[in-house]
Length: 46
Image (cartoon, rainbow, N blue to C red; front, side, top):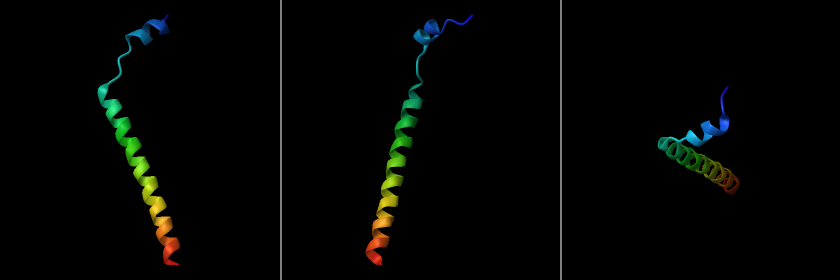
């Protein structure tokens, strides 16, 4: 049977995953900012 406590102690995260998470999060923030900019530009136009 698997001892999950022992397995968690052996766990080592992959460095690339941290980089990918940062990159995805930053992209999502910029996407939201771009949407907000478009909405405000539309309101200012008409």
